[in-house]
Image (cartoon, rainbow, N blue to C red; front, side, top):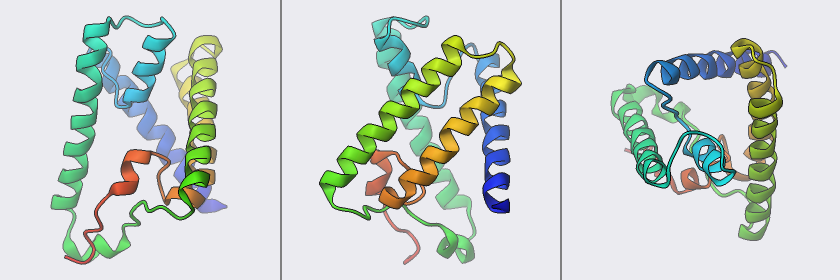
Length: 158
């Protein structure tokens, strides 16, 4: 229970830091799903062209960050990383991904559009939506619900 609380606090701080950093950079975001969902709903400032440029840039940034972590993390700690892996059959995985993605996108819409104006409270609510869904999704994909991560290469054997 203590580890879940600590994880929740860390996620909250990360959300808060990236939120402030994104605002300071003129509305940058670290999750392309949020931008795509807001664009699809007709909300936000993105045009089709800016959304088409922003999403691949965010994915490239995520890949670059992952590669940097893999390169900079000392080799003796690689065994501690739990890489995402398909833990159930494909049909159950697809259903789980669809349900979790719908729930998290819907809840993020509710928090962002109808939630509090306070950045602290808004980020806390987003954390309280995200962490339980990631924990529930870990039974299907490991430490991430992101379907792109399940193809991750295990570098612990290097």
